[in-house]
Image (cartoon, rainbow, N blue to C red; front, side, top):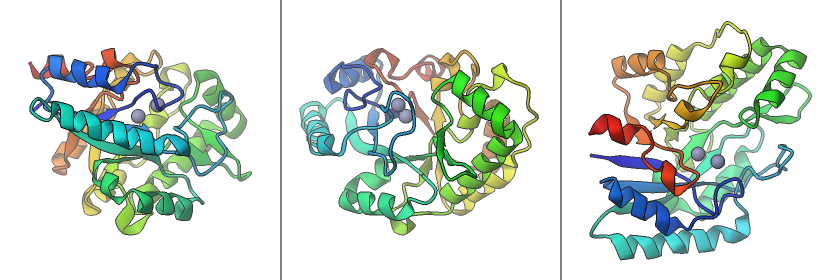
Length: 259
Ligand SMILES: [Zn+2]
Ligand SMILES: [Zn+2]
């Protein structure tokens, strides 16, 4: 069955202004049978990217969830629509994140847990996917090995049910740390098999995310093929997601593959 379980909306300040309904229409056009909106949940930290636009605003949540409900009802005969969030795992803010999730328990089963922010040794938070230049600057300053090791440790924590029973059990783009990999030299020493075993043992699924194919310094899916083949060995479940930030991106790249 064609599904797209990672879709953003106009509630995200770095997305487009197109209405959510346009995403639904596009999905129906493509024959998608199930679509999940996963807007970036409000951050428990002050956004550290220069544009301050990483996530949605808490005051918009009510409207966001209400709009999904309206679309669910309107299109129920054509497509299943779900409401979730893309929740950040931010080290040191587990309590705050858990409190947020406790307010919207019905969204947890549709939500994605992602690591975009790393807690650095100086206690500041660094967004790994904001821009190539900021990633390279940080890599040169701290060493790529340091960034990769912190990412690995942070991912291990994200995979250890950091919010207890409130933890979303799907990991977003597990190797997002590779997003700018063509722009620098570094030998990746992350133990991916260990991370996948944790994914398995703690009953998470994997976001099979096609946004990476459109990133000029990456050009692959998340996870990449090597990680996918290990994941399949372990019998892990992958769910396709476009990570669309505009309607045209719904179902990107995987719809053709499934024809
Ligand atoms: Zn986004
Ligand atoms: Zn996303």
